Length: 84
Image (cartoon, rainbow, N blue to C red; front, side, top):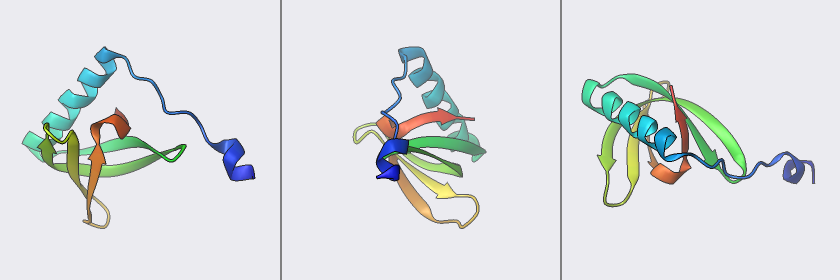
């Protein structure tokens, strides 16, 4: 019950914010730079330090390597809320 109360709606991003996120992801991919990725999943926001390993514009997915554990993860563009 408490978990349901702490959930938040999916953040709505402006077109400008989406473009900034895409640019930062592309820079991480091309330069193999570490970024802090904030993503939305099941009503919660999560943060991970990642390096972008692949960007698939057709499927609208990003394949990333977790900096800490070196695990590969896949995110949908629509789930990414912020990149720092």
